[in-house]
Image 1 (cartoon, rainbow, N blue to C red):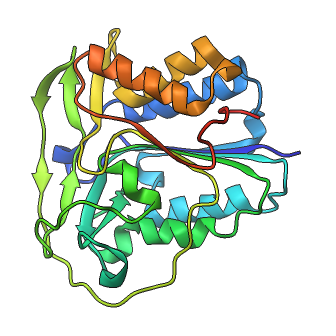
Image 2: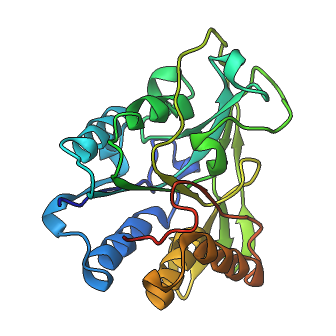
Length: 271
């Protein structure tokens, strides 16, 4: 058995107006949890990408490394913490709302060559063999529908929304940003359902908080996810853990609703 993890955190983007503060802490905290608390992953089988190294090409290259040689019984973890967005779909036949959910690599500029769409992830992850325990965490805006067709009403077919994480200080919103651009829809690819599970920081119409908690910056979702995993470990299945995370976020004033999708429902984080 060979367990592997890819952890991607982006605080700094080329446009300083889009900078975040808690994303690198998120993946450092996740690395500590999976190596020290759970001891399910070995450090030599973990790769981290941060800031300028987390380009679209860099992320795709390391996702291929993550899946390379995977066999039934292995555990794979992909954790992304950074900006997420909704962009006009290139594949109108597949999207009821006309939008794709995407993550924003370091080199994201609104053009397709810098975007990682939900359809791109579908193509990449279709190669994961059956029996592999694959967990995908996305602490990003609009994260819920990264692995499936969204069901929200179409708002504007020719605009993209860089759903920059809302920045909180002790749960009070300091500021949020909305960038706009253009794209041109074309025709469809073939996609397949996610072979694994997605833990998303928020619903597809919500933003994910970049928060100041206990004198330190984190993604609020990642912070409370790890908190509950440390407390409950494998004593509760992941759908119940996500319910606890939802409760923590609501209790502390964060307006986001994490989701769990795919094969991990009613199962544990680790086998």
